[in-house]
Length: 91
Image (cartoon, rainbow, N blue to C red; front, side, top):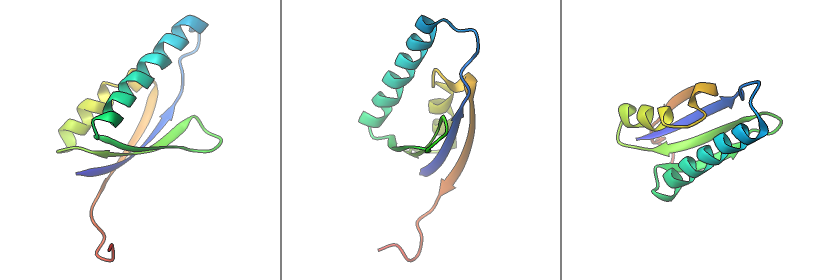
């Protein structure tokens, strides 16, 4: 199943530069592993915001939820999910 996911990030205040760098490094490694295995198909930055649109290709809602909950930045995100279906005009 394909899902369009918008992720808006609000980094926690009061983190040291080292804590922030470590959190962001874990996030990058996790997301790139999912991209390499094909479940995170696309990721697009939203200009002017700390946010992205991503496309996931996973078996079901539960798998998607597990992947999103595993993101190191998950506690600092507002996430909206839109399941996608093939359009009848798609060639």
